[in-house]
Image 1 (spheres, rainbow, N blue to C red):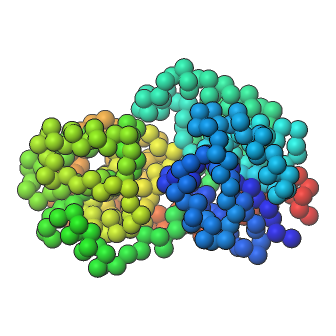
Image 2: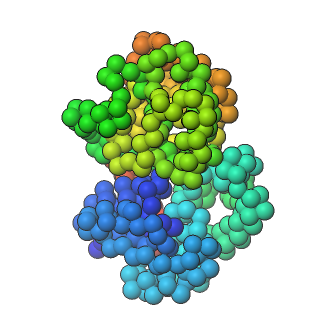
Image 3: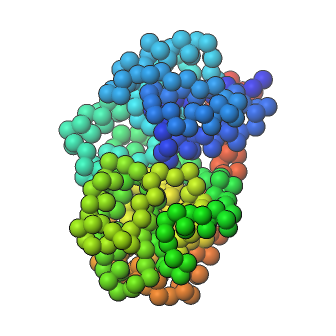
Length: 388
């Protein structure tokens, strides 16, 4: 008998949680699992990838504002048809949707936690309305109290925050780190050179790269300010941003205002992150908060020396000057010093890159994560008497 797992997520846009869902669904043994993926509303970016892999995908086309309030009417018929052994949710709106749709049912639910969302520092960095976040936290607490899901956090940082902010028993929150399919980062020399030509980068430059959504919490304004300092010291340095988001126009304008736009490249949303990383001499990731930094892990896996911020999620996986250079968040001056040091010290670049790559392969390889998730599913179902 195949294990039927229903996954519910807010969207299938190109985000970290969405990619983790696809990694898990597409790499579990098809002879053992049958997955159905439901998302609340567009974007649909990654739906085709799931469908091409042979998995059923359903968009509920719910309103983008509070979609969970409208979810039960459309989700309950799917529950009746699919009859899942287990439901896994991804992101808080999907958590709420499933909790409201399964009240009174005995289906075990696993909620994945991706961010320390209710921490004051997170709310401030994300520039989210505090009143809204407090309402969401109360809804989260209340619905979790009567639905009693098992929570899986992507890091100890997220686990500790959830226990504190949602008043959860420690036994109900586990940690399974996000993982990367290394094969998705593979590229070829011709693709790298094609990208270099596309970006009009000379062959002998030092290229700093940032990958991530262009949003306040990613700290990219501080990176531009830091790069201005570095660019005034060296004629051969360039900076690239791979990603898209609400701050794109603002960051482009800031690069012009700082007089460095001729050395800054905006690559847009990319599907060839492995190629982008292959082109990079160093990776800079100045986030103000993270649950588990997937972009940083990808850079580590590719053997690119990294600079990142001294925050909980980063310090949980890398040690300063052993696997990466850590700087204080919001400090353009410290960021610039670290960039200059990596630019000038080839030995340091090699040491931290090799140590980080070894660590990432040991801890964040997708094959290990799939095994861990499979064991968790079996444990949850056995505890409910659904597996012997």
